[in-house]
Image (cartoon, rainbow, N blue to C red; front, side, top):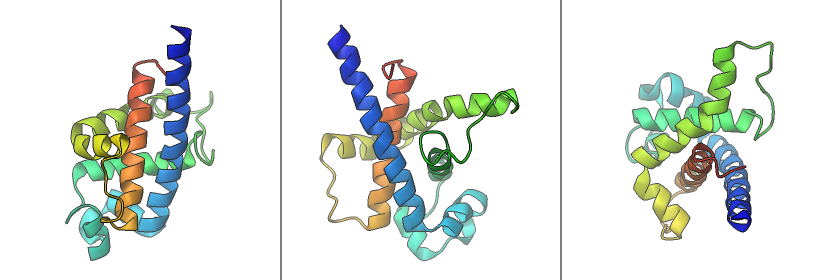
Length: 154
């Protein structure tokens, strides 16, 4: 049983690391301002950004970009913002449960993308860099969230 726990713990670390890389790559590839536009006003994004999201930015895409930004600036990423005891309880809980939210949204909304990427069936040469960055983030953040939700990351 101990070897199994070690395996899942190591997988969680690898997936979390790749999620941070994917989040940074995705936000930088799309652009910081354009990433913000995805969250706040998706109708105003440019054609290249819409192409990244298969024609238009959907509700679940917006949640995943929020997750990418949170992953990038949160404790797993750059550590720009880490909720502490002085912060409202809602903020601390949101930071705690964000990986779970991303994991569930990723598995439910992007299951083909997640499984193709994790299983090695994704054709990285066909997609654009921004699509590949987004796929890397969605797949690895989803796997991290699910492992965390199941308690296999400890």
